Length: 166
Image 1 (tube, helix red, strand yellow):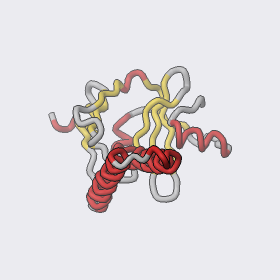
Image 2 (cartoon, rainbow, N blue to C red):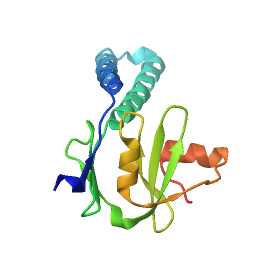
Image 3 (cartoon, rainbow, N blue to C red):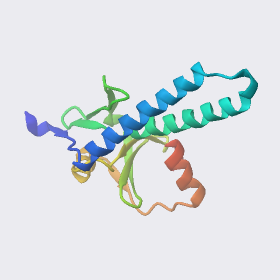
Image 4 (cartoon, rainbow, N blue to C red):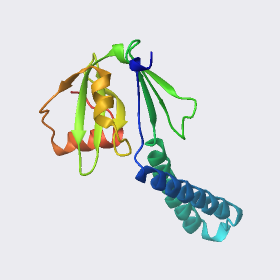
């Protein structure tokens, strides 16, 4: 029965990153609340500028916290379920709705994008904190698009939005 399931394994260094991001996130929330309580109507521009800056940094921290995913793949039912600190109740992905996968390698990590029948990337699985990324990639069981030609615009669009028409 357990042969039907593949579970992700986190790298040891990811625990340090996770704790660091929690510390940074809590510090940013503290700074934003302090700005709110010490709001100065005379220096609106400075206070709003700092608030926007800290708010953008908080969004970056939340994006990194969302990368800490525990992934479980049910091979028999073709279902991928992932849990993260941002979505602790989990999300299900029906793998029968996807026809291809696209693997992107950057400096130190790999990412896997699932492509649906309209040839648009929909789901991203980041491999920066996963020890068994290749095992998860092979357990998904979709055909891989190899040697896809990226230009700079397509690459940036895929990295920052997660959506790209293939």
